[in-house]
View 1 (cartoon, rainbow, N blue to C red):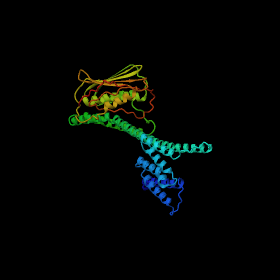
View 2: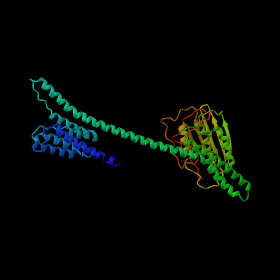
View 3: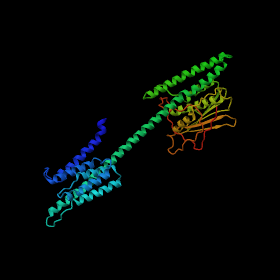
Length: 432
């Protein structure tokens, strides 16, 4: 950990010392003897350029200006042939890597001017070979700054690209976590909401009649036990799905399980009538489960808000292209239990499920004071439209079972997908 923290500083020191020392050794003819006057100038240059280059990461453009000025003045001030390059190109690389393109472009122009001024060919018409050598040297010293600058820009671009990829990866990871949390929340809501609602209402009713009607109280307690066992079974299956990578071992409920669902509500005291129009068709497991959840959510809300003694009607209409679901009640006595049974996510979750399958959901109050829920699920759609409008605004959404988009077992039904939510639709809710 300590070495990683000090590694960049150590690399800067090594590069600064190496660049300044190589400039003295390669680009000057100073004898390395202290008695020579030129030796001390070379030593002064080495120390100055080293001290400046150490700060190149923090102040790249300022370091480049100082190094370029020292390099340009080295020969006139020293009085001998001395044309430093390595320190200049190291500073130019740092500017190209760390500064904006306009700033880096100014540095490139300055470096080209320096390279051209120090390599002006001595054109001699009598010596063609010397001319060609001078031209080749000038071209080399001109292309060298371009290469260094382009390498610095490439490094900068590569780092920005890598940073963008990492940010995208982190964003996708956060989105995946959020989606998984939402899916788990919907799974839990689907499993326990209906059962807990009926259990609470049955417990409240059983407590009220325990003294005067023990037999009725016993039936309520039997219902509580049965619903609790069913809820535990569904919870166990959900946990198996979450822990396993494959499909659940047991099939999810579907339209064929609606009669048993209606019986469970009747046992809780709700008067339910059902009608089926048309011939039910095999559908994809996701659509089959959605049909079941729509009926479950609607009847759970009737039980919560109209009370166990209320009446409700379930109508399923199967056509060649879609299945229509209508669940309504005529109002009735308020629920006996006044506690907070709502989770606030029922209709929201139902909209999410239908939107994922390409259907629609609408709710409204009836003239008689009841409540009606209408849902439509297409049987042949490939999925939701790309330009579909967002779901309608929701005011105090009614609680219920949130849809589950987890893995579904193979249930022998065929595929379906697709839903659009009407943009002008607004959810009406009732209050307990």
